[in-house]
Amino acid sequence: MKKRKELDALVSNGKIGSSKRINCGKKASGSCSAHELLRHETDSSDIEDFSILQPRRKGRKKHGSRLCITSVCLSLCQFILVTTSCLVSGALIWLHIGLREDIDLLRTHLQKVEAGNRNTPEALHVIHSSLKQLDSNVSMLYFDARKSIADIENITSEVKLLKETANSLKASIASAPAIQQLPKDMHSLSESVANFGSKLNALESNVKELKDQQSNLQTTCQNLSGELDSVKLSVQDLTNSTDYQAKSSVNTSVKDLKLQTAVQEANQHVEMLQGQLTDVVKSVEKINTTFRNQLNAYSELPAKVETVNEAIVWLNNTTLTHSTRLSALETFIHSNQNTFPA
Image (tube, rainbow, N blue to C red; front, side):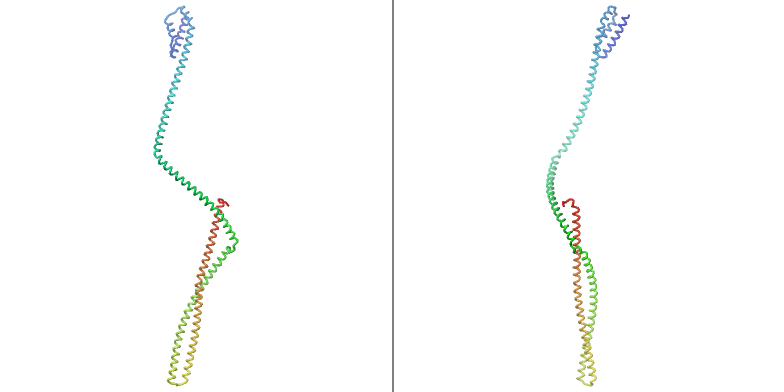
């Protein structure tokens, strides 16, 4: 019975090994021998034979474990190969998709470049013409720069000369007393012009008075000439009457005396009137001469006043121009003393 139990245990162990070998995918040779042992009953000789064959079974079990390990390794290798192939195929698909996208982008870029290169000849022509214009402009700018350099050199020389002239003008202004006395001369000229104006006003009033006196004297002369004419007529009448009376009759000597006295008085009156007339004529001539002299002086005064005014204006203009030039020179020198060499 004990042997039977041992055989059952061995059979059970054989079933477990056979199941393991079936799961590993190999041939179950030990399981067939176990089934054969279960089918046939054995006696002690068989058990002894079986017990003798026991170490052989242990060798087969080791061989089955080796086969199981190799099958596991093969399955792992297959799994690794499958996974790597899947990964490689996925990577290849991803690379293929990326390449397709890059190719599409390159195609679109090439189409854009081709569309843009359609107008390249015109653009190149325009660029060539613009380059020619730029070349001409650069040459013109070079010549202009040369000219500007020459102009700057001339300006520096002129600035030096202007500095020298400004210094000389400052020295001359500081040393010239006439220029320092210009304000005094201007004040004196303005006072003289004011005096000329007052004198002109006085002369105008005198001329008006002389004109009035001349008109009065002319009226008196006319009156005196009329009186002289009347006296002459009366004297002629008297002389005619005396002659007529002497011829007609010599009545009395008293009347003759009266007539003679009257004639003498008339002659004296006439002489007095003639003297007054001569005095009036002389005074009129004197008035005319003085009036003429005053008129000549009065006619000369505007010219003198104009000359004085012109001189004043000229002096003002010259002083203003000198002051403006000096101020401009000072500002120019002050502004350009850092840029231009001294």
